[in-house]
Structure formats: C-alpha cells, structure tokens
Length: 259
Ligand code: B12
Ligand code: SF4
Ligand code: SF4
Image 1 (cartoon, rainbow, N blue to C red):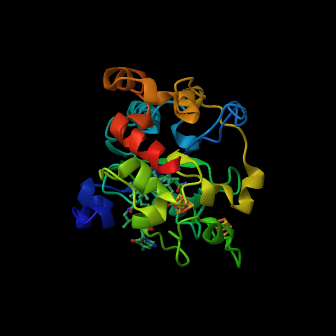
Image 2 (cartoon, rainbow, N blue to C red; image 1 turned 90 degrees about the horizontal axis):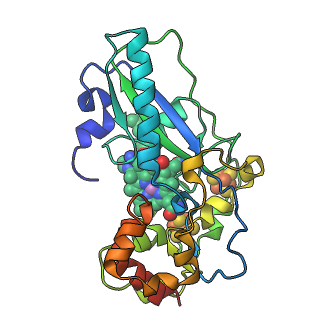
C-alpha cells in the first residue's frame, strides 16, 4: 500500500492519457445462502464461494474494451480489478454506483453491501458522466457495532491488523493472536459480519453470475473436511478460487484458531 502512491492518487499516472473511468459493480450475493446450514461448522466469505472475481470481472472488462475499440479504434484502456494501485471504492462512488459506508466498503441502494468492483480507464472523453453518489449512512452505526474484533474503531476507519479478513486471508503469520482468535465466530476465510449488518441489504438479491455460483469444494472448508486434503489436492481443487490465496497451511492455521 505504501508503494506507487502517485499512481494510486492519480489514474493518469497509472494510465497516461486517461480521460474517463468506467466502473462496474458485480453483484455476488449468494444464490443458495442456506445450502450448507446443517453440516456447517465454519464460515467462508460470500465472495469466495465460486470462481475468483478477479478473473470474472477482468473477462467482462476485456469484452467491454474490445467492444469499445470496435466503435472507436482509437480507444485504449487499462483494466483495474483490486490489485492495481487504484482506489476502486472511491471511483465507484464518483461513478454513482453507491457510497463508501462506515465499514469502508461501497454500499449500493440496489444491491446492499454485495458488489465487487472493477474499472476500465480509457483515453477518450464520453458524452456524459454520472454524478457521485450521496452518502446515506446517516446516524446508523450498525456495522461498527457488529465487528467482533473492534477492527472498525471509528467512522470510515478500518484497522486491518484487527480484521478477520486480513488474518484469515492475507496474513503469513503461523498463528493468529489470542485477542483475535477468541472472537473469530467460526470465520475461517474472510468475514462478512459488518457487511451483513447493513440495513441497505434489504435491497439484496441473488447474483445471476454463473461463475459466482456455490462450488462444492467450498463445503470442504465449511465442514472442516479440508483438513483431510494433501497440499496437491488442495491446490488442484481451489486453483481458480480465491480460497487458494492463504495456501492449505493458512487454512489449517485458521481452523485451529477458530475451533
Ligand atoms: C487492502 C484491501 C483490504 C484489506 C484492508 C481493507 C480496508 N478497508 O482498508 C483487508 C484485507 C482487511 C480487506 C478486507 C476486505 N475486503 Co478488501 N480490499 C483491499 C484493497 C486491495 C485495497 C484497499 C486500500 O487500502 N486501498 C488504499 C487506500 C489508500 O485507498 P481506499 O481504501 O480506496 O481509501 C481511500 C479513498 O477512499 C480515498 N478517498 C476518500 N475520499 C477521497 C476524496 C478524494 C478527492 C481522493 C483523491 C481520495 C479519496 O481515501 C481513502 C483512504 O486513504 C481493495 C481493492 C482496491 N484496489 O481498492 C479491496 C476491496 C476494498 N476489498 C473488498 C472486499 C469485498 C473485502 C471484504 C468484504 C472481503 C471479506 N469478505 O473478507 C473485506 C471487508 C473488510 C472491510 N470492512 O473493509 C472489495 C470491496 C467492494 C465494495 N463493495 O466496497 C474491494 C474494493 C475489492 C474489489 N475490487 O471489489 N481488504
Ligand atoms: S470484515 Fe469482520 S473483522 Fe473485518 S471489519 Fe468487518 S466485521 Fe470486523
Ligand atoms: S451499516 Fe449503517 S453505517 Fe454501516 S455502511 Fe450500512 S448504513 Fe452505513
């Protein structure tokens, strides 16, 4: 995060000639939220139940870029999905998709907390531009109060060193500190607690994206059976899933901490 600050704050440094940004939000609210209820011991973040969204959104944006080039061959574009030094949420709010809620994620009046974001920066002006979305959080603070590890200590402030999402996906540490593991609430890959708390989820609707449909492999985590897999079996099964990110050793660490 500390590197590439100039690119992060100015998309025309990231993509010279940048004139416009097209932002897409893809609804990932689970199509079968109750599927594993009976046998479930552990929780997996909703965004990780199907194919990795980086691949899904990148494919869509590549098609969009191809389509735009057919209309105007001079158009070039740089795709940003999560990993680029680019402020996905800020530009989504500017493009009118929703607003940055107090849990620091974008909230939509059409889909609640459940949009994943991707952008295409292009080198052409467009006929018209959308307006930035108004913030509708008001006095609500349900997300802040719901966080079990106090990772949301203030409005719009996330302390990643206390966030279960950081500890269960990104951390390379061999163990999880006690003050975090005591409050894992059975989350072993990511965490949806603050997202679920948002009252704007009354507008949530099941995702229609085939690639986000629940994959049977996900149940191996939810039931704890993943512990029976070898490293090779884990790598093969979760090849195109976000669950591959912490490796099997990370998942085992998370299960031990959450048990
Ligand atoms: C690092 C990261 C994390 C870290 C830290 C998250 C955090 N909130 O700080 C961890 C691992 C904890 C994490 C967790 C999650 N993440 Co995450 N994460 C990111 C990532 C890669 C970078 C965010 C970041 O720190 N950027 C650097 C800072 C400087 O930028 P920023 O966060 O955009 O915030 C700045 C701007 O808003 C700016 N700003 C505000 N006003 C203005 C005005 C002007 C004029 C300007 C110039 C700037 C500006 O200032 C802010 C602070 O500096 C983004 C993808 C991305 N490239 O944005 C995904 C992203 C935020 N994550 C996402 C998701 C889904 C999650 C989880 C829900 C996953 C899960 N279920 O476990 C959790 C949610 C936790 C939470 N409550 O936020 C989605 C959120 C989608 C949405 N609807 O908002 C993103 C956008 C990925 C994507 N492409 O869809 N994540
Ligand atoms: S994702 Fe979970 S741990 Fe992280 S801020 Fe939200 S509720 Fe807290
Ligand atoms: S729970 Fe309340 S404060 Fe948090 S993002 Fe939703 S509306 Fe905003």
